[in-house]
Length: 519
Image (cartoon, rainbow, N blue to C red; front, top):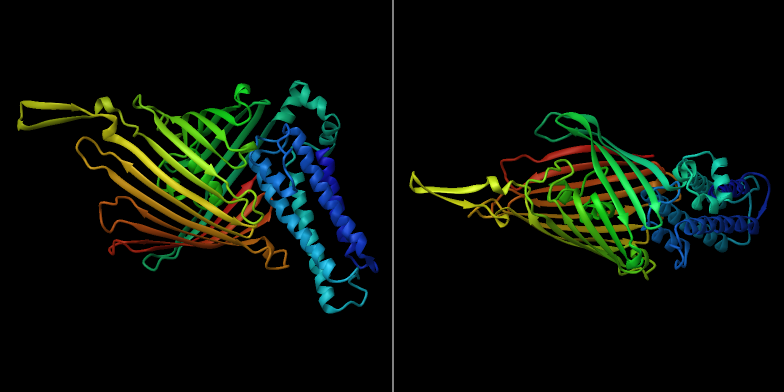
């Protein structure tokens, strides 16, 4: 059924496009009817997703609201959670463009003439622009078809027998309906354009992720993600995530338990707010304030259905890293992360959110092997002092969030304060990182299909590795243009400058081209 709807949307778009072609005068009612059909099909598509996701869309009052709520849920049939979120964003923008078409029709009379009917240059240009925009809609809808993993006929057959598909547990049906495989690949090219150095650069594959998600039951899901990255100048494949989510029946719908190798929540969500992990990690991830994945157990408490108004996650973690999983002491780290989305009732700011974190624990050191030996009195009279966890403590406070205005302007802040113990009777090192970032999307400011896919991005990082020392901080500035020419590709051309408070260090300037491929 879902694939039928997608095909129906695409077919309707093609009909609308044909109405704008040189075929004689066309009545405005026919075009408006076709536009209404697009919206109707989009709504029906989301309604079908709702049925497959156990009433997750029941309280949604509009298509965009439904789309946003769906991104909080588990993997859908044939579409991963992250892929579905991207599609949701695209559909929200498309719906706004359809509304703009309606406003134009309303303001320009009751009849739209064709390109060869002797219309005025202004109307002629407007019709061409409408044709181009409808072509863009058709192209983006095709992105939905591209993420389906089986031929259309197979999807139609499964949709026709949807109840049978969800109830039976045969291998072929279960594999198709409950397991998804998707991936991402980051690549980049850069050239160093600093005044103090000769130009040099490289092309490289930064990262490649392959993710398998499977719905084990209505209340449990599993995820496994591998990470291809460069270690010691060689590509290595390591395990990034491997965890199970479980919603106990006795706790209701608002509690989720996660066990295994899992994301550290603050870094994971802040990367989503920044939205350009393929270009650069967030400041806390970039400077290794915390690992982005760790072994442990966590519990999530939601505010509202499907975390509509936010959540709290409590985590008990090893305090190691997914790249070095060996636990060197028996102590565990505690992490609490709170997300708030208080503007869900606002039309313009409903996607805005605020994030807070408190992390405390012990660095991954073998405390039994670390002792303090004082032989300052006599060489033969030594005092041995065992090292405690507090001597190698790791404590962090983070505050961040993003204001998102009507899919047009983003503005975010990410502040991190880290304290690291350095041993017995030694002063702790205090690090600080502040990042300010934003984006301006141009789809509302131009009728050009090319320009509408562009956004201006910017970011400034202030990093101080040791607040007790002077002249050791640095500032990273990023300015660039981002484009999404198709569903599966993002490209960012950006200029970066790193300057240092130490006058003896020269600033560095680099021109980057970053790409994200999704499949």
